[in-house]
Length: 134
Image (cartoon, rainbow, N blue to C red; front, side, top):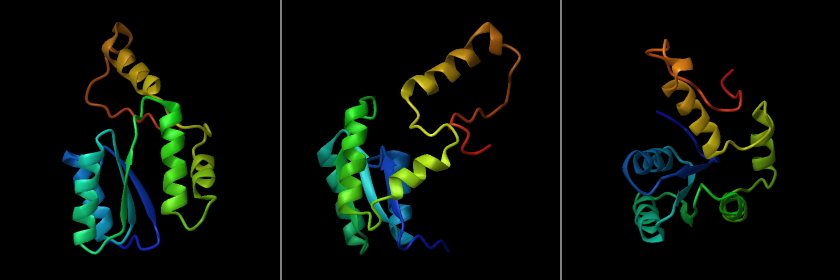
């Protein structure tokens, strides 16, 4: 149904729950998958599941609250899975704000929605993606 052969996918929280399902789905569709989470053992279990399906995957321990951990993770994925070393730079250039989002970006949206200023907003999806979906 979907064809992601030749694609590299980095799934944060890919070692459990919805993230695990996303990682397995992309692997079944042919993508090379980086299973990213803080727990190395859980990462490796999902990597083994992907390998059992005939897919290609790596597990990368990462704390997405730490910039240096994110940068190290991206470098690892680039080195081990990406055949095109410029993929990350191109991906960031596609985001109109040209930067990686931070936990504070999401927190600011939540603070706004929960404040009196957001008191008349109901039933909306607020996309916090640096303008990618705009």
